[in-house]
Image (cartoon, rainbow, N blue to C red; front, side, top):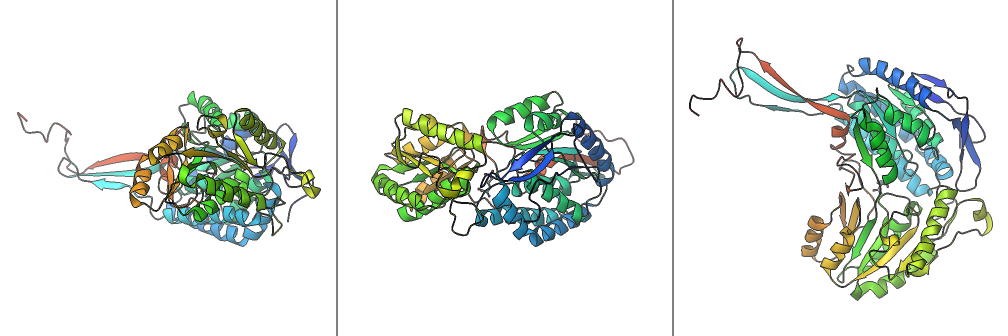
Length: 502
Ligand code: UN1
């Protein structure tokens, strides 16, 4: 890996690498070993002020750069990400902890998103439509908004910055990125590579630090009209409140409590594969993770047995080792939270089938490893079936019918992803219609979204916006309607074209 040790990194503001105004730093630790990855500026209001000034100034020129030219810079960035894929993948196994294949997938998602949005530079379609008056031309165009504040999480430390920055930039906005304090080096590499792709100074800026300090200052800054945030529901509410006094556009991507339904006619072995991948991939630290399995009573016993067998075969270890199936969780607080839910599940009377403990054998003791955990006989109302745990824990719920399965799946505050395993086409289509989530999978797990479709959820998962796909453009542009009157005379809409007496 290129950059480990106790090196001190900087913020990037207006094309300069600079320390935080406070001169203070914080450390990024590897969740796999506890080793120090680097030290990063602990930024606050003053740093955000500087970044906002730089981004605001750069905006006045960047918005005038033709969109295809902005797209070409993104295309170069995608090529650079491809070149750096192996290095970023390795770094991700160390700084964030996910296993190599998944870390490679995270980087690939950024490559895909960046190419997709590079192409958008030659689309960014608006509409033309007839006018109700003669000699008049009507159209609508997308216009950039200004400075975007992007507050990104640690669980997809390269992919999610790309989901936010690639569309924001191609649309003509400038950006201040505040990456998660658990993965600052990946955030800094992302911005360094964007700089290499040829973005003018001030178009992208990075301000490191904590949510309550740098993040809060960004959400409150009057010159940052758009905030895009991925993280917990609670922080999403705090961001919304901080931004409210300025009536900012706020895009939120929050929690999930995603369910996989397994019907009596399902291919159970296929479902087991999908559940293991969706519940324990990324150690369950995806918003889309399958933290609930709702199984028809006819297959519940078989499914439970096979799932427990599979979970117990999973090998815990550092993400960079080839035979690791499940990496560490992000930090000490995470392991404590996950373990507290094991106790909550027990106290609620759910049946702990496997896992439920911190793994400490050998080298694992140095990092934050939690055994894949499955609870059986879970009531849909229990806290372990309602609250987001964000760890390798899933809850098995037994139901007697399709309708009961849908009710249980929908009976939560979140609405991100859902899935059903069935070979009955009628049930599949009813599920597609009735599951109240932003994403639904048929005969696949709850994870694996592709970049050219909208990503996001209903209810408390967000506030109605979507990222990825064409939908992302709505977060980073405003519509402007333009009327061109070439009649040479005053024409009054709704009046001149209405016949007397009509
Ligand atoms: C997230 O969990 O925050 O569909 C994003 C998936 C990934 C993205 C997950 N492509 O699981």
